[in-house]
Image (cartoon, rainbow, N blue to C red; front, side, top):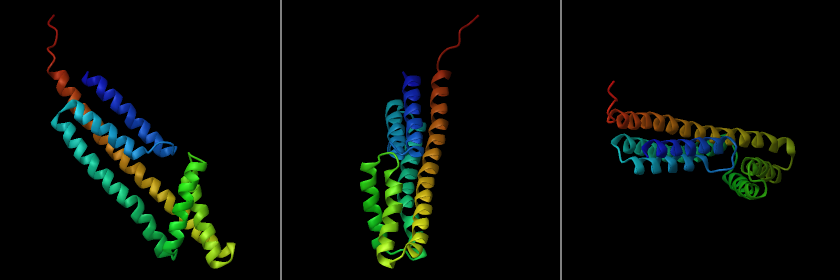
Length: 173
């Protein structure tokens, strides 16, 4: 039972990682749910430690995922209104073109808002490039945090599973 739960949780963690790379699933949330389900199922101190670490990393990742790119774009001179337009168009893009609509919509929204504000494509283009870089940073943060959680899960799972295997008596010859 313990090994089956661990294997299922590992497969869900893997699906979460794939969901970050190919944005179809909410990857980091899926990784966190898998670790939480595993920790609740195994009821082991290593599981609780991994869950605490995973939750802290996920929260930090979610905060950084939006805070760092937004600050970087504002430092470049992109107004908050442009970021809000980009976010809104990104959300619309998510529904129109599910796998890649969010980043594409965000970049197009920033470009459109800057074009409307500045009056020329040449002046709006640098902001769109910054938006693309910000989207890449955001995805990079999410992927890095999810990989760190996956590594912590692998370590915790090996501790839990090896401990349960040590309790099984070895056959005598």
